[in-house]
Image 1: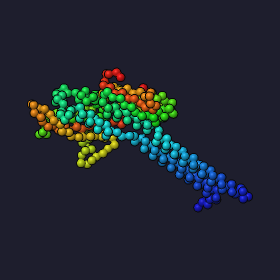
Image 2: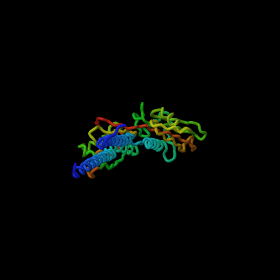
Image 3: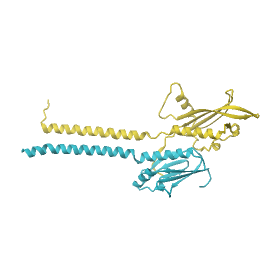
Length: 174
Length: 135
């Protein structure tokens, strides 16, 4: 057994105290750094913006625009979406499906990273899978009217919009 | 040892102990406050806010954004206010410190110009135009 006199006890206590301070300091610093490294997640807001941009350009006053059913319809030009941003390796995805009254798929238009569709389905599934690096998705159905052979028909638009943009710290600003 | 010597033996370690603790707690608090209101947080917040504003806007539109906190941080780091926001090729980059900046993309196919508002200190004006139309 080691017996310490008063001075020895104080020295031992001060070593433990420095150790305690170091542990507390490291804990606070790591917590703050971890908190700030998470970032501000606006992917869901972005997915909503994509959805709203698409709806507002393909449906005008409750009617589906005529161009949408044309073969050479360019959704990027019509909805003022940047084609390059939705190109290869994109952080975004959208899918527009138009169903008639009998639920027949009349037309499908999509853009961006196609793999997001599966990721969104997995998250929407019964298991409710969530993953940090999965895209944030918005799937909405809209009812619109459509002229066909001088008759007004009802169509349903199913729009899926997804974003997985993380943003980045850059070392050089030009 | 006399009584005076014994008293100083007790007081000095206690005083040093208290001073060390105060310095330690102060350093931690300064670190936490500087981190929470720091360049990294504001750069990210402004870049994302501007990208969302552009995506939500319709051409032709003018947006005025209050960036007073950003301006103060930039002044501390000797960054000119007109160099804070750069928008090029659908990417918004905000720089408030000496170490680079933060970039975020917007999806709209629009021409965007951003410059400081000369009539109101700390404000930035963002002009959104249709593509290929000069502001």
